[in-house]
Length: 157
Image (cartoon, rainbow, N blue to C red; front, side, top):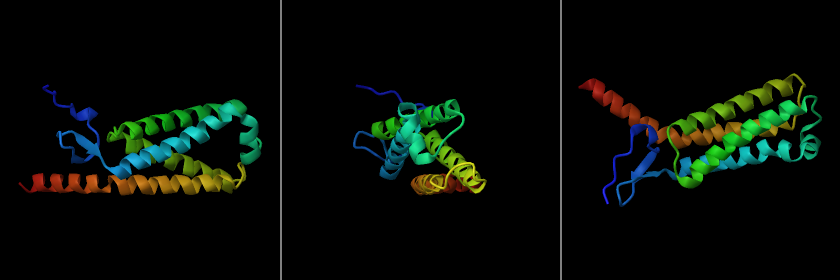
């Protein structure tokens, strides 16, 4: 059976090719997408499923609708990352999503704990978010290095 070439915009971040010539996703990329996805799905959907237990751990909230809206968005980001990890379809956009979401949430955690708007328990989340950023950077670094070598080699011609 003849396979059509995969358009550039749908290619995964590949580390090697399989025996059939299809790209395979680097294990650290897959693991990072899956880990962040599961973490975000659990913590994101939690206030939607049990706002009471969520507030027992994170402290009382004034605007429950806003907590639930943010939770829904975080949960959906998590679901997308987890599905990509399970399906081994980590496209180049996913590290950007993962790093961007983690940096945003870490920044919010740090600023609002310092302002005493949210409880210090959120510093644990900030540590987790910073760890996720580190994992993404470690996972994409080989691809970034290869891309840089290709760009500089083309420029030298």
